[in-house]
Length: 120
Image (cartoon, rainbow, N blue to C red):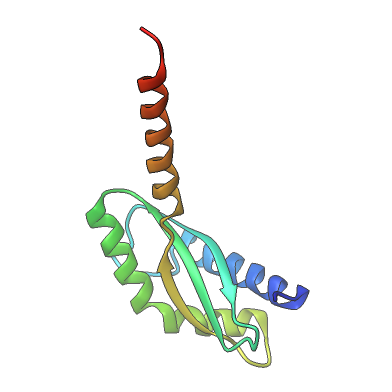
């Protein structure tokens, strides 16, 4: 069960990560395409935080950006720790958010069903 504190910490971490990505504090050349932190989930004991991200771009750019974020996780965790001044900073990990792709697939399926049911 998420508490208000966990939600606030997750939101602050998401903001910090977004700022780092948009201001190009991550100098990794593999970070290409439009990278967005979609949400952050924090464990109840605040030991872990999973940042979900999406990349607008080709499949190659998505894989490249995913590798860049995963390799920069410890650096980004340090920046979050310094900026948020938490007693204990959650261990940061990244996971690709595929919800937009899944929503697009569902939309296409619904459109196909709609086309099949239309009278001719």
